[in-house]
Image (cartoon, rainbow, N blue to C red; front, side, top):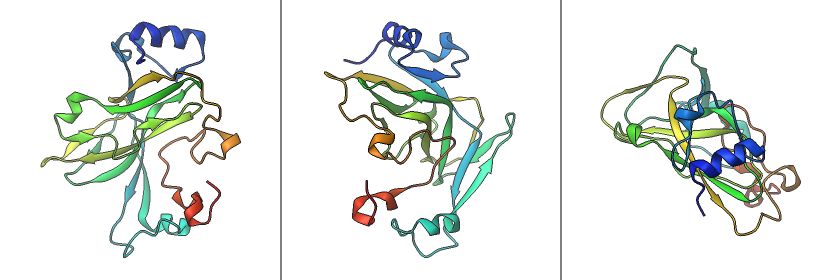
Length: 195
């Protein structure tokens, strides 16, 4: 079952679902979703510094990712073909009986801006800001401003709560993240990690 606005508001009041700061619930809570705003931090990928990315080489991250912070009243220009990691302004906490789906907003989609390449899911138990995989599929640069509504979360109720939710008991890589986070795929078992 997908939560409606009434369900979302009830779960927020009860405190098991957290979206904070939720500064304008009348605008941000949609009929079946919650709009999230763009944060100020970005990770930009540099392709000139390395021949390729090796998923198992954590040390390379500094060679191909630059951190950029935009002023609250500034703008980030996303050029055609660009891919950057951004972050939501809000921090979320997803209870053990819900999955949150990260979706783009149609108004930005009509400008050719997408907010995720593959990571469109927040598992039950996830806590933290959400890293956005921002791309411009269009032909013109688009100005993104911190605080603008950039994405939306929809919530699906599980038939039963997750027995092993996302979090420290699982060694989850991105639990309690703040700001955009580069890939931690080197922690996967196939690359010698324990995930």
